[in-house]
Image (cartoon, rainbow, N blue to C red; front, side, top):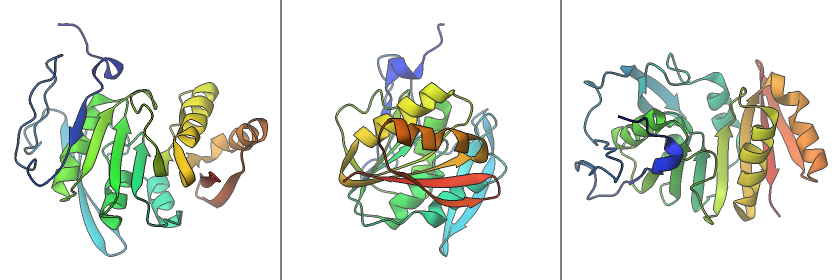
Length: 228
């Protein structure tokens, strides 16, 4: 059996009132996700509890995903820093098991929310965690960067940018393409580890983008980029 790459599948899931207890049918590659519990999944590690502004969340996590001990500091810092202005559409770029997108979906119940990751296992767990936290009208998508997003535009894009994908990939896939996918008046909020602070201002300068560092704490920096 050949390995299936995210870029080949473009697997996408929707949540709505009639989807909560349905099992997804296999796509043409035979990939299937279940809306049922992941407790018997061989990748399952544990469930993480997280509280944001008095709202409790629970996330199932897999052994090989990022930050499986607890919701990582960078994600928490970004959530507590970003200033949301009632967006109607939200993209969580590189969603992992889904904490950023799910918390924002809960806080913006009228928004259309897309959680995207290149890791198919992360997409599976984000999909499960959407149901686990009773989120409606959110979708998950397997995509390398913005590849499968197409021409869709967003009022708010958030990302905990991975540090080890290389400078060019960060610039093109996690700064320039998300910025291009913003609606006029939209906002891109992202967090990086402090080692990338050497890079982010340079990206802003050479692309004539006003990327503002909003907060720096415990080895992480939160940046904001507004599209006029």
